[in-house]
Amino acid sequence: MFKKFFIIIYVLIIQFLCTSSFALVIGSDQEEIYIDANFSGESLLVFGAFYSDPSQSRDSKSDILIEVVGPLEDVALRKKESYFGFWLNSKSILFNDIPGFYYLSSTSEISNEFLNKNQIGLLNYKRSEIDNNSLIESNLSEVKSINEQEEFYNALVRTKTSENLYKQVFDEIEIIDGNLFRSYIDIPNTVPVGEYNVNLYLIIDNQVTQKYSYNFMVTRVGIEEAIYSFSKNFPFFYGLISLIIAIIIGWSGSEIFKRFRKV
Amino acid sequence: MSIYLPIAELSVNIFLLLSLGGVVGFLSGMFGLGGGFLMTPLLIFMGIPTSIAVATSANQIVASSISGTLGHWRQGLVDFKMGGVLLIGAFFGSILGVWIFSRLVAIGQIDTVISILYFILLTGIGLSMLIESSKVIRDRIRRKSVKRKIHYHNWAHRLPFKVKFYTSKLYISVIPPILIGFVIGILSATMGIGGAFILIPAMIYFLGMPTSKVIGTSLFQIIFITALVTMLHATTTFAVDAVLAFFLIISSVIGAQVGVLAANKLRGEEIRALLAIIVLGVATKIALDLLVEPNEIFNLSVIRVMI
Image (cartoon, rainbow over all chains, first blue to last red; front, side):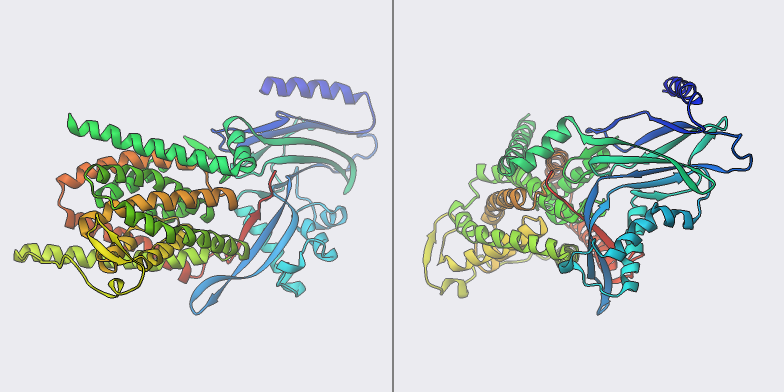
């Protein structure tokens, strides 16, 4: 894999040394992640090369930012409150179109101002949504005050982060030789299926100089896909087959055991 | 080594899964219980979503109760007529139960309700087993033999629609068995249990059935209740995970057979007292989860869309 990685990088560098004064070229080791019976999470490699013309400004600071946005999903977030000593679910918000997976990393610490200005990052994801209120479906929103909404949004990010589905760090991109970079992104086993968007930003002096995006898919394959789609498309027969399997195993278990007893 | 569960959408350790099925199967074989009352909460502790734990347990109980029924049927200990009458009630009860279940999922209270129900249930079972087994142990030490009444006459014999149940030598109204079946159906659909530990005492004390026929008959009708519950969950809540069920069934059927063998060789009361303590331990864990302030007071559930 490393061989492949360096060959690609090499080709990329040659390609873009001949072009403009700012450039960003990227690649990935996988275009698709397959969920099969043995799937227990995966590590996705994103790599590339960047180039900023040194003649332009000697002191300019260049950074790379990688953002991965998973398929959007609807999520109900519930808050537990104590009633008579019991911790029960009480208030809830329904979030529409929240990324099921989110990853953000950069080569060095990026200021919140920059993230705010460019609408990148987890906090901005939610803040932009709070403002226009489009994410909250009225029938499930029992949370009216802005402060409490803020609390819910923070909790959303926190719980997703604790499930390893959200991550925002500033030091996970490795730089090699000044112009090459690579980053391993952990895809946990609870990852949602669908289309993932990878955005790469080349930032020079706090300005997005170049942006490059591509997609990859997370798909179920083989038996996992067969069982899942069968259960959704033919729920009656799915239930029936589950029963038949149970009956066969239960019945043969008692038959085999009966023979053991006789011997 | 781990296996990815297609409906639960997560991967679990395969050996953990097999040993869970094996241990629950062993206990159910030893005590003649379905084991659903331990399977469901233990699956939830493992991180399986509540709805999938309940629906998949029902599927697993189909297998273990078939195994058990066949053994009793060979010895002529199944009252099919009584089983059928119980099933009429159970049929409507489980439909209501699955409806209640999906309503609770929709309003987000399913976890809490399941926890409270399990706490009540496990505390009840655990305490009664502990009291019963310690009494037997005490009586054995004092070398006393306990006499039991064989037949009870109560209100179940005075209601209308009386029917003759030849196998059980009973002539009672069909209303009590239908009502009992109804309650068991609701519990089965909402908790993923067969309900034998409620059904068996109810059949003995409310219906006055002979003890020898009770276990086979309850197992017989549990096959059908849990089969119906599996079908209802598969078609309405889409929560039956076939891969999870497969591994649980394989290991629990083997575990159950070993449990039956072990039951013949070991003294029952001590093990029953031990099981009672395990059951009370699970109940305590559930109670603590409800009573102690959680680290994270927010919880998230993804609303799954059909793809």
